[in-house]
Length: 136
Picture 1 (cartoon, rainbow, N blue to C red):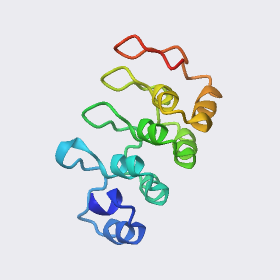
Picture 2: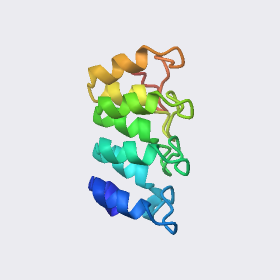
Picture 3: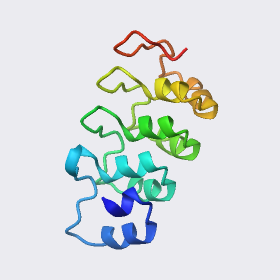
């Protein structure tokens, strides 16, 4: 958890070399290593974790935030591209408040991420959050 949260790629690789490490195990607060790496903008660590079969790239935290949503929230375009290439990531998945990755990117002014998401057919650009606020 600490290595992924802080972007320590070498340490992550060493730890993942062990058979007794569970890379998709949530820690305190329900955050997974992938969630922490995505939130911190650690693209190299995200790439390492996505290269494994035992990591769910669409697993949400207790608030319903997925790695894609957190990457969109932070405006991490490279990470968003990486996650959008996967068939096992829902690009329009809302969190518990109804906020989607597009909503998060638009709310934070991340134009590049908004363009990437709007370029997909599986995004509803008019989805509203629980308060009735749409990305626009």
